[in-house]
Amino acid sequence: MIISMTGFGKASKRLKKLKISIELRSINSKYLEVSARLPMAISEKESEIKEIIGHKISRGKINVMLSIERNNGTETAMQIKPEAVKEYFKLLVNIKKSTGIKEDIKLEHILKFSELFKGDNSDELADYWNDIKKIIIAAVNDLMKMKSKEGKVLEKDILLRLTSIEKKIDSVIKLSGNNISELKRKMMEKVNNLIAETKIETDNNRIEYELILISDRLDITEEVIRAQSHINYFRNNVKQKELSGRRLNFLVQEINREINTIASKSNNSEISQYVVEMKEELEKIKEQLQNIE
Image (cartoon, rainbow, N blue to C red):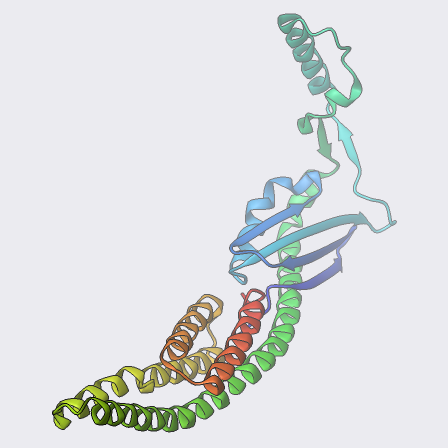
């Protein structure tokens, strides 16, 4: 199943005294990375929020923005902890004395300590946590809808390119059969000319055997069968419900390997051209797969 790693989701709801809003933005990443901007009052819930997102999303860099407003339109108020401010100021003074730093202690230094602040009505927000979780889940579901929609666009493009590769493989198969027969004929002609010029006795059976060996080395049947098998497996994985980004990347590498072998075995300019075109399509598929979860 193809799901894009990029997307945007949001959800909001008015509770008794508050309006909770959440936005999720997702971009490409090899692993799941979640960063959150939360009000201080629920900052300790960050790990739980990451867990909620992790249940639905396996890869991508997710940015979470959660805001809480009172129903009168003002942001949830912040309060200072006076005792904490005094303690941290004393700490900075002691550090200054022990290190011999001459710089004056400024407000910006004290503000580095996040423990100085507390959200207003933290207990009240804790009471709303179950409702907030539901809003987060709604935002994740909204994000997944967009990711799935973009995934369908990627799927359509990838499958079209895969079909193009299949058609080129069919053309290569036809050319390869003619190529081997023609090569065998030319080699037999050269051998006969050489025999006629040198007037030496030859073992025709031995010559025929050597030509068969050369033909076998030029035969691309096995590579074509494996490439077609990988393509069929690729299509099946695209249609399955489970996420298939990593597996599809592996299959593309295997298809590319078989195409490279076909190129090394073929001594034909038309086949070489088809190989170049197939590799171009594969490169474009690889680029698209970088966007898939």
